[in-house]
Image (cartoon, rainbow over all chains, first blue to last red; front, side):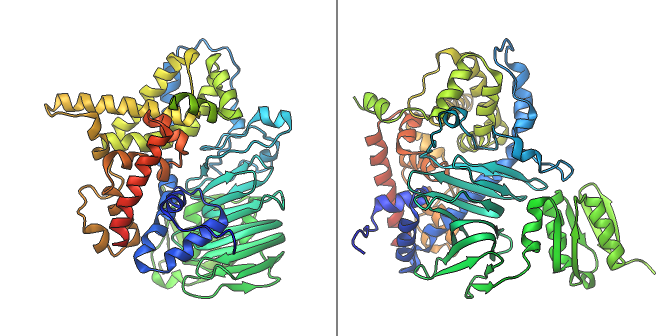
Length: 340
Length: 194
């Protein structure tokens, strides 16, 4: 390549700040891979996302409730109703409400109303961050018109620029991307990079799972694994790619995606998943701690779709289906075999 | 001179400008939006100084209260975010200084960075090499970066501020930021790739 940039301190510094373009990032990664002593630079990227995800602990709502009464409230402006803020704490609130909302404030996401009125594309040079806690979902509309739906315990870090749109994801998200060939939309999750070619897709990359899943609902994407930066795998609608560390990218073509995409519509779907997996999903979605008392139960398998589920609906259905009982104390739910 | 250069090069974004205008006119909703957007990151930042989550929250709370009180005269050079980091830093320094007086131990502003642990609390040069875990290794290497450079690095790598924003947050020039980052990189590479 003619324009190849040398890997100097300035580039590494920008890499650590998460400011690199995708090609720069790829170049840095292959430089990092050339020597084991450089491996730790890579760890920073994931670490930063983990730090961002941990910000939930500061309980901003409570902080604001404490601050608000202290302001000498002779304010002139109007109060933004709560509906203008995306915060999903339960399944009962309909996702439909999302579409109607234009002003978005969600942990660092601000959509400029001025800019929209003027019909310009606001380009933020600095990165923005949005995240969800357990039991929470959130939908973000980016300045470019793309819509990101975040699953629970997830965070995205994104930067929209004139020539590219870069997103780093930890957790679960559905991306409905406004395609722009001149501004590629790239999502990095773990060591998997997905580039939109006009499309809607789900990426699941929880740190606890260690594998990364890319499921495409419409359009096409290109997927690149960091260890093989030159090989891009194209996925079309109905395709699922699973990256398990140390193994080749596994691609299934033309499959049923519901297991990966139902959540976007507010449903909860399991397809031949073990109770152990289901328990950890339920914990995530409903902010519970679902435990399995009998190890024999953990490997039982479940296939089901729950429409507008509540925690107790799903737990009732599962215990009826598997012939088990459950006991709930606060956030702790224990599943066990019935006493005979 | 550096100051005026910065003013030219870094105008607040349209969103910032709009929010600032609304804040100056006393609109609580605008203030709330700013608060909710930055609260978590600022608490993280304050905690680096005070090592106590209660004090960190108090510092951020007081900072926002002070900003509300002087909202009409608010001047932002690069971005609202950089302004907020600068304000929290000032308050946190004040806080630690006060804390130091209480404890009868000297505290000087130059030592600020020494308190800003980004990783292991008391790092040894060998930690970076010895650490088996890649995360621990970079943490240890960052902790070995000289104090003021480490503050710049914290703002850049953890909070993703631009050079201009770091300059405003640290009240130095962009050139100064670049120098601090160069020092940081030299130190980091020495301890990671050695």
